[in-house]
Image 1 (spheres, one colour):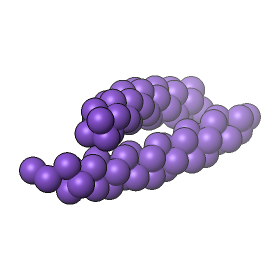
Image 2: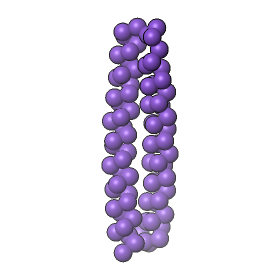
Image 3: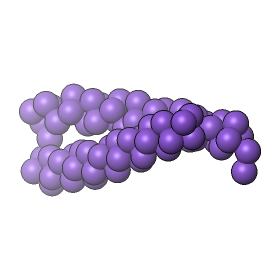
Image 4: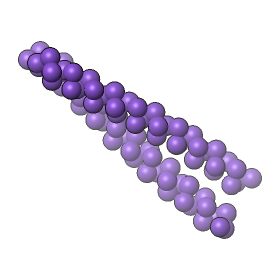
Length: 78
């Protein structure tokens, strides 16, 4: 594959990852705000906590992919 097209694909993937990270951070924020509601039941709090943990795991996976993209970008530029 031509280095320029490989770099384009890496950058496109990087943009998608950054967009997904922003979405996840927004969703975590919304759940955090909801968790402060004093009228929530125990099961609702557990569900919110569970969803936040899953979002944090997904965020960590995306951060790893982002680091891989940066590494590939550096390699393809050399």
